[in-house]
Image (tube, rainbow, N blue to C red):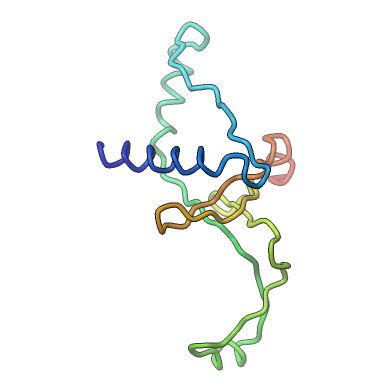
Length: 129
């Protein structure tokens, strides 16, 4: 658990250092609080059952459609052209559903994603229909 805290401290320090360099600003988010007075015991129980469900988060740089013939001809050094323009934001997907756009950042020699635009819940629900 201490390693997680150290890693988060490194990210926080790096984000604070990068804050303002490219116009990006850190955003203070409201902490989730355990306010049992606002929700019923049944609602809290339902919420607790989903909080530990694992989800897959992926960052998509772009896509390309190629034939199986061309796929089999790929080898080391091959270049696959994507439909995205360089510098365009990456898609952030959770279980295959777009939830945000972001940009690549490097902190302590590790890649990360800085979210630049989060899709609203209403828009996500519309895409499900």
